[in-house]
Image (cartoon, rainbow, N blue to C red; front, side, top):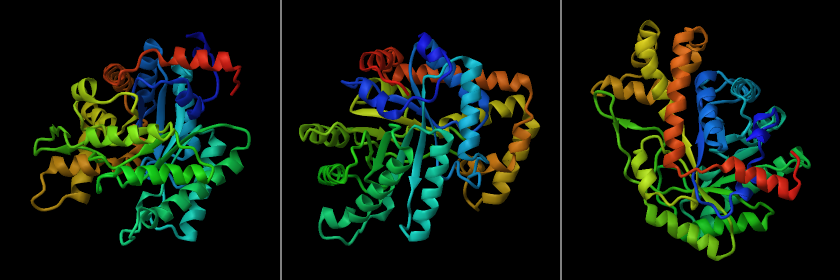
Length: 380
């Protein structure tokens, strides 16, 4: 796939969405919080299978103050670019995940706009505006409950339009708080249709369908399979949207704890079209450090447990939940891991990404995107 082997800018998310029509797959959207080698492994798997992947970090992971990873939008974009050059694969979308509003105050909105500008300047090509926390729970109608979410989501997408100029990009919105009450069909329809009336045509819609961010573990640190996603409700929402002529597809958050065989066998691929995987990669790296860099692993483990441990809570549960906050604290040590460790991360990420790509039903999406770009004579 020579087109994506040559250096080029990240693929605009809207082109990926439009090219995969009808949608038949879940696109792997990876949050690579740690190390360039993780990104290299994922991109190597994408290259060998001729697929496009989405690489993303959220506002809490990455921001102008470094987030909890120590990465600014510029630093993350540069890390991804360097990984792409090392692998020779530029078939990726650079996505700003969960650019979230929690209060909706003027100060918060101005700060979020600064963050969006930083992502625009860094070359991001897809954006998820998450104003789902601004729900009016006492509202008597769907319109009243979702008014603030719709208004602020539309405002921030208009801001992006103004600052991106002629550049196209992917758009994701969120109607239900992940881990909260299940989103129902009227809520999803009202949200998508109201945004469209405000000039915002969503590509991906995140809903609350029973998933949660992160994973749950037992006392020994073994991941407890997440089996709570309501696939029936998810399909009903997409069917209702498509019946009204909307093209939006579901962005499934919180996929790290779902067994891959269940995704392969049961998930409605295409209707769920974007699958976010974040904690999975972080836990993979901690397990590699435990073997290849035991002294560093012990330091990280002790720091997390001493800072966040609670009486009656197993240490491994604490570590799994809070170890993300150690990334920034130990960033300098993580930059100094051995070449042997780096290679182990790269190869393990490659193998795991291959399995995710297969389970997600991805089949040479890069070829489909290239044909779409060629036939439409699109330059980006």
